[in-house]
Length: 319
Image 1: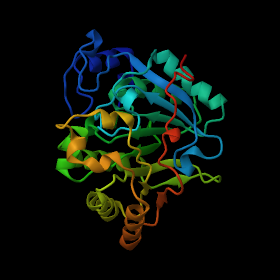
Image 2: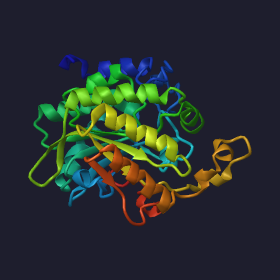
Image 3: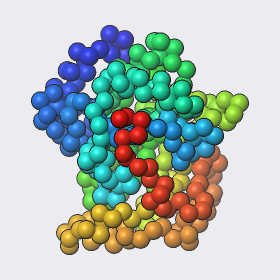
Image 4: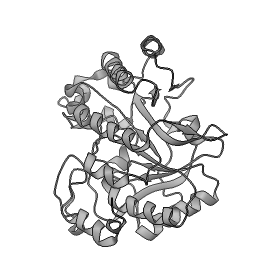
């Protein structure tokens, strides 16, 4: 992409008629006409701090510099970051402030800048990263996304993002419609991840085994949905083999808001969401992954399904 696009005028044009993600809401976010993501043109963020609960090659020993953005274009019913996904928590961040957060996290010792749920602020983020890279900012940038992305929008990030950290949630259209309001999730996410891989290629690590470039695809195993999980893993392995890393996560935590539902909600259709993944389910999934031939992967051990692993969204690093 031409560097001339990374300007405030370009950002404003994107916000005036928003088609950044596959929702294509065409909302005028400049005038607070919010689309599906419930987000205005102004960036809102709930936290910018060192984060130690990512994959080891992202968190390292000093932490990942995670900036959590408010709002989301999926709003999964089981979301582990429920309050910020609904844009209930967050504080305004100017473009200049976002750029300064990169420097602050660098000074704190972060191994990278980790942009969490960034999709709906992609133009603002791209502009800030472009400015930082022109000034020689030394850390890799991580794009931490639910993968409901437009390929056209992702192309604005080429040369700016070093590490893609996308989810791959479902193959099933039924699940993705009921749980993430996105019946076309698989078709969208599969081509989005293909674009991410095209941009950054196979993984590159430094001498401390920290990833500097590459793709790690995450899959959160949902209780009672092992069949779909296996389809996800098969698709990823047969498509990319060991050119990407696959992170198979068991940390699903039933959140309090799930029990506050009525008899027409997805939870009534999938009551397993009120439970945690059992050790037996997870072991069977890992055995399947091994049989497939997955070698470049991450698994979770111990008591990861705890709300204590979810950070406080209290404005740390923003206020």
